[in-house]
Length: 189
Image (cartoon, rainbow, N blue to C red; front, side):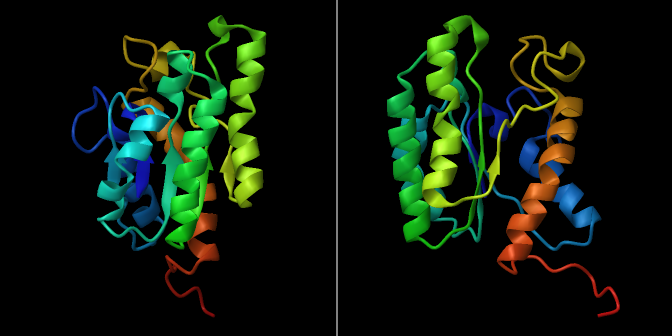
């Protein structure tokens, strides 16, 4: 389950080009028999993600990519509140026995150094607390590149999503294989 905001949901993208769809296709191309559920909700803050957690868990996922917080940063919300919401989400995933890959976010630079340092510390702190796999910046290689973003400069276009998938896929594969959730075809073993 990809649990996130518009970056997961696929704001402005045609069917087949969202992050969950492209990630599923990339994993299947490697012979991994997986389904990536799209549990993204455009506009969600971490508080919104926490509020709809029961709904998402009703789909009974086996593992989670947690991608929330971009809207917290864009709105300049208190980084401690962002941490507290993500902490509650992670506690629930842990209670459910779900392995989680935390996909971090970085604060927009226009909010100042102090805010940026506080916000940017949220995700490594969370990963350390839960000893969870951590992908530091979900938009790595895509943020600030006009050719990989839609006209709003915030949401990746299909090529941008492909770049995200390319970069995060090894982390997702490790998460799945560590929990025996996706097997590769027999490689002569």
